[in-house]
Length: 176
Image (cartoon, rainbow, N blue to C red; front, side, top):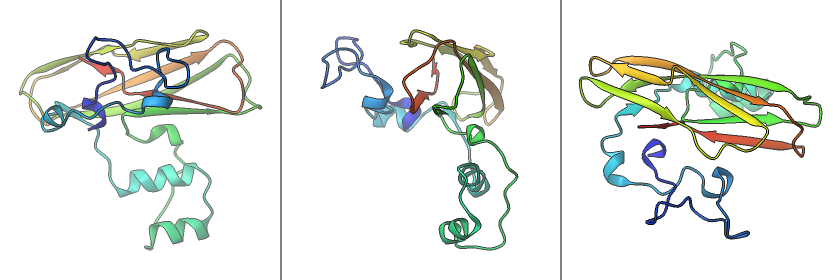
């Protein structure tokens, strides 16, 4: 549902912040408004299993006791993957007062074509804050059959200091 939500009102304008009455950010509107019709036929999906979530929680630094209470199963293992490795349509970069700019981070994602046999998707980026650069490689994903997988990398670069602590949250590059 997250990848088919919309973030613009009926005039084509990004949702407004209730606090400032200017354009809102993803931290205010989340993934946007759910479009149930599009959610029934999303085109692309981000597949994950239990181990993916285990790796994510491990990356957050949970103790063995906390992990056991959360997972409620044995055995389980952590491969020490970064929290950025969760194959999820949003991206979060956690920055602290120890983070020094410039900062570069990469987020790898894999999508599965559940739409038409052949499909082409292009990344579209908008509303990027000043002092930040975002790239998507490759910018175009081409599928030749249903259930085919393709991966892409979203890179972010921060070239100036931001107020800390700060979480910069990016939703999936709009794929059109």
